[in-house]
Amino acid sequence: GLMLSTYDGIHWASRIVFPGGLFRAIAFNPTKQAEGVIVGIGGLVMWTKNAGQTWTRDNDVKVTNRDWFSISFTENGKCYISGATGMVARHDTLGHLDTIYQGNIMVGTAWRLDTTWILLPTPTNKNLNGIYMSDNLYGYVVGGSGTLYKTINAGVTWVAQNSGTSQDLYAVQIFHGNTTWNGTDSIEASNGFILGNTGTIRRTSNGGVSWKAVNLGQGSGGAFRAVRFLNQMAGVIVDRKS
Image (cartoon, rainbow, N blue to C red; front, side, top):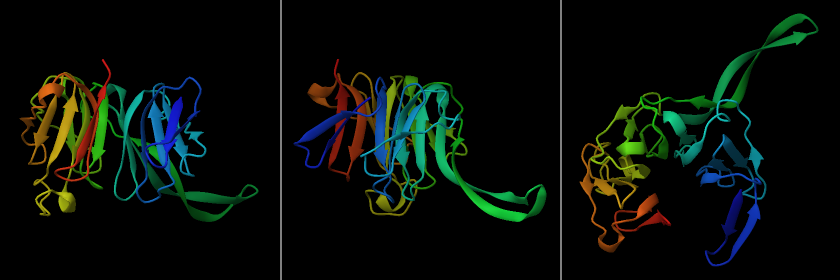
């Protein structure tokens, strides 16, 4: 349940957010920068609305009964999480008509908006360790034994892709559309990475249709857990200590 925060990367403050909790990921909403989410083991999903000063547990029964490993926000602020047994969930706003009563007499209806989690099952029961939404529609999840799935409709359906590896995968980042490195708007002209155990790093330049291994030399034995690239040249990967 430990969280560390910094304003300059040099000075760090630590505190216990959820005693005994096992956190696995944290992310903040690009459209509301003070809003963030933490996920973890045992159905642990927590929200902040004030840039991490306070955190509140999400008790929606759709997310409290499984382990969650990864988070990704879309450019329009939708939150996706991935976890155990092939599950993905999206936090969304849904509208419905509410009936208005005065006493026992119905006097009209009103349109209400609720924020809720929507479960988005994939065609696998393997753990999905990493998720990345390239834009509001396109996204990827990776998991055990080289599992890789792609969505083109905001997670409604997922299609398997051949990652070219049987190693457990833990992280993915693939750019689309206006953010493609070759400057085009072609959805499939997309560059990105997947990574995982035993130094596995693979790169695509066509939206995941095919993958090539990346040779890291001395880092070839790493158990990689996360990746973030700012552009084609500048990126960071992190390793789990053996």
